[in-house]
Image (cartoon, rainbow, N blue to C red):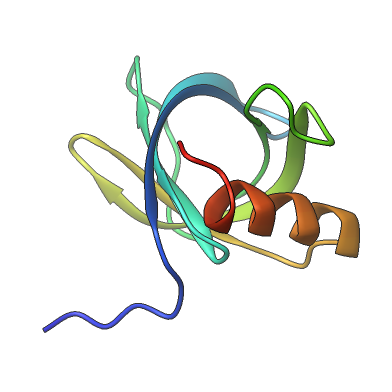
Length: 105
């Protein structure tokens, strides 16, 4: 049985993912305090270990309208890319916690 460190919620939202040489949009499939999984609309040349700045919209009524977090590619599948979040500031952690644990998504 797979054990996860954090609760995961299924979400359907468009995110933007960028690095110096790459930019793409994807569809957020699920998110947790530790990372996210997103589907990419087009094939993307990325590899495990690549680091991206990811912008995730938050639900209407949230204190912030979005979070921006650095994520590292940890897995690439035919249907999407898994990212692990890197260090985040307290405000981003609070917004992410509220999004995952206190909002009906």
